[in-house]
Image 1 (tube, rainbow, N blue to C red):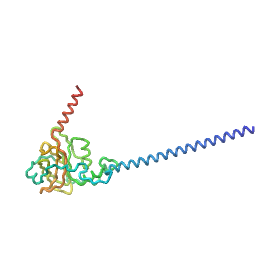
Image 2: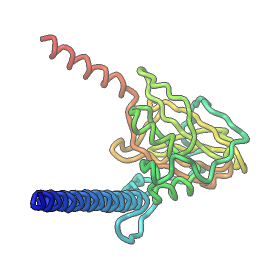
Image 3: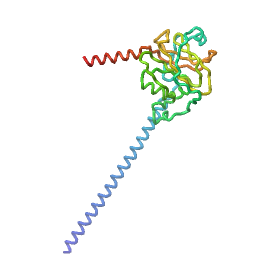
Image 4: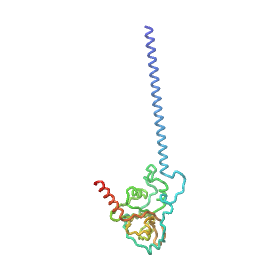
Length: 256
């Protein structure tokens, strides 16, 4: 009887030790998992910070010319004085599609934050802050999306399939006339402290001297002094017709 009790006590002791060891192992395993999760979270935060920093600035200290996204020497090879264009150039008809005389440009927009990333690159932000004249075509939704979000102003888009429009946005200026000659377009206006105006001109009314070179669009005072400028490629007026023809050709190939 005594030996049976001794054996029972021994078995109970072994069971107790095994349970304690298993409990300790479980606690140790849970501790390792928590530590791993914490390290993983820290690494993810560090990578997120690196990505946000990449969106904000160039990888190395560097001097960038304005605009930061165009190569140097992008101006037309022949640039005439503004007064000469006004006096001898072609007067262009234009349509005003936005007129906000009291508009004040924001210093910062929510979508410029680095957590968004698409519009937070500082060289671009500085470029848009330096300028008050901006140009675009309505030939791509993605580029138009960037155009509006970079300016911080939304304007109507028409996509005229018969005649392409060049959109010109001017801040703090009352536009009065538009002229063109060669690869230049001169937008004449009166400087103001506030305001935003958007106009459209037909690319069919333009007669660039060299269609392979960029157009120089200049914002100027009535006395011929340049306030600001914008560079943009020339796109012919039949852009949308050619796009539609290509789509029709692709459809015919599918049906054949």
